[in-house]
Length: 332
Image (spheres, rainbow, N blue to C red):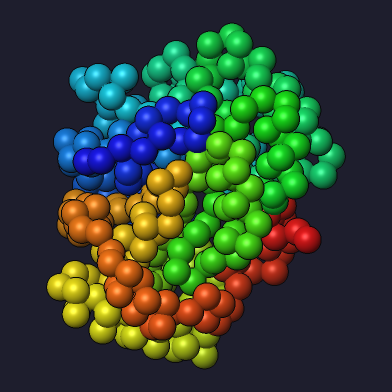
């Protein structure tokens, strides 16, 4: 597994990271034993970056990771944790809390659940208007000084917010959704990160399975699968987006790879400061994703991909209207 460094001040990590959210939450039922086996397979393949959140399964995801790392060398894993989201007993969402006392409380619980004395990268999942990003960064900087956090990350923030945050304390990496059908960050956010020496960890590189090559119009999503509420998976939008996948499949087959592999490889090709997070929940899907790091796209490949899936070609927004309104990265 090749490595990449997350920005000028961040850690060196595997060129692919593993996103753990779906092993606990939001994508329907999962198999805990298979999830742990998948994490083990990722570590054995050289993946070091493991991305979780304290609200994924309301703590379950962190405890799952703790169990997966038991008996392993903790120093071989770079653990990235998102925090801030509030949940209720039924699993619903109750906003975000970024007050200093809340951040310190979140971290204390995270360290206990993970069974570790530090988090490698700690980041608020979303920002809120009531707490300026400078104040959030100040609190996180104190945690870095204390040794409880090694690096500070951010998630889904605008270029302006990223510059303001970086002026307070170095930001190791910015996490945001970036894929063939989610390319808005190319206009301003990605250039700002590159110029500022900030890494990027890209989630949703397969658009939550939509451009994996494995989705079909007949596929049913259960009530606990949040994709049933996403505009890109609904009605005529889904038909349009799967037609893009069919066009991408032609390019992939000509290269002798799968749709998922060429979509992940495309994100890998966008810059050495970008690390794609793959959300494999099973070893089979992990093996497929790992194949994306085994080949390099040529200029001809990139041109063919661009022709098949041009920027802005997707139908529907990546979240529903209410969720989009919470994204600092989507604000003008």
